[in-house]
Length: 147
Image (cartoon, rainbow, N blue to C red; front, side, top):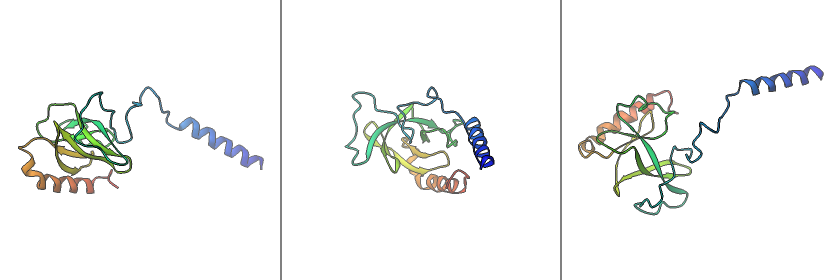
């Protein structure tokens, strides 16, 4: 029994020493599990979010950014011309990021790619939605990060 106790104590000590530390400084306490930030005071929303949902601001990761395909970096991936750094999206507490809006108009949803939700607010890109969705879906299915 003494050997078992010593072995267990050694395993617990090793686990504590080797476990990565979570620093409160590194984490944004206002960011939810989907990467959404609280809305600034007075932000107008297109409609009520519904049961189990809320409106959140998401960081924009533009096509060409080195983090565009990095699934560890939270945010909405945007293809095409878009000037802002954040985008208004609905968030469901179970389902994650929902539809996104710019100036009260819903943006074109291009599906999910390796990095995350893919959208465009550019009218020049919108006609190519079926083609982009097909490639994004294929990339998502073939990526090792997709489950």
